[in-house]
Length: 493
Image (cartoon, rainbow, N blue to C red; front, side, top):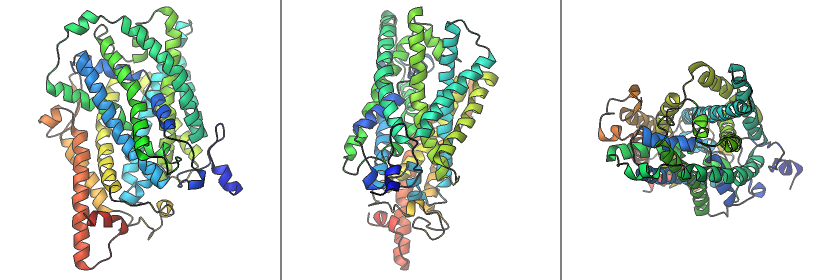
């Protein structure tokens, strides 16, 4: 193996030099178990408690219904993440880079932009929440917690998260494992303590909500958990050897993410029975900490900070790769730094200017879930027919390259994606309390009332792409024109 190839193998504590180019087989390492720690660490943050509180306080679900919704929503959404992750093992590149093979090198710009915005939004939410936890810790020890302290806390959290993201794959995977062991154990301990304080008579006395509320809660949990990570899974699988079974990749992803999410969401639902303000708190971390005795507050806040950082560093790594995939010609480390600046600006807006957490949070989750699931629908259909990726072609963006198609666009895929988004938004309604942020023309229908616009996006995108792929292949065959290699699988249906 050459020195150059050796230098490209990620090592803990050494900055990863590879960008979006595919990983050669000789440089792949690890096993599926690493993914369990990665996703467990990314989902053990206190935001899960807030999600559970929302189910009870805003959706009116009982605790039992909330637990069922937590299981189905988190397992189902991360099942999609796991399935989409396997393309990373097949192609050796990040998810949105491999997406060029599906949409074309230019047609892929639009899904890449949406994915990047999603990551930046998630990073802002997670870093902002972690900054609140750090600010609360400062308050506990008796220091000032004014605007200046808020800015300092946010900068500190962003710096740590971005620093981990800059080091890259090997360091992230190593840190996620130890964050899971240390702070996962603390999370379980704190959760057990909070569960003891729950008013169980109130739990048993709660009545269930009607089916529309349950479906709406299911859609909210799916959007708030796995759907936000749909375009990230392959980024952490691309270094795995091809011999690792895909079923193990899917199982490790689903189990690692779902275990902490189900526990935390269920706990949040229990706590909301006695703390009605938890779901709408501008500072959800402090609202949860108020339920703890003084001696436990500091350990809780430390756990909250690092639990959120464990999710933010993953998101920063993926958003940096998305920025490069979108055509920004910078090093991966520079791309992460750019994201850190944007996150700081967004976090300051949420903490210092608007002082509003829940409104932007729910609006952001609901709307971005639509184009992300539409992208997933197209990619999943493509996965069922694609025998392999051209690893040289995946990073070649010149006219006439392998995935150039027509003018750089694979129109069957891009059109299916756009039409599915437009259709799904008609069934989408975003409302916080009595304030309607967005309402589609068909949001009053059963699908709209049950917050299932994202489901329509995914299924319609998949159906349209499959149908149009077959139709275009038949037209080309009848005309005697050469058929694009990527379309041949669909033509064989």
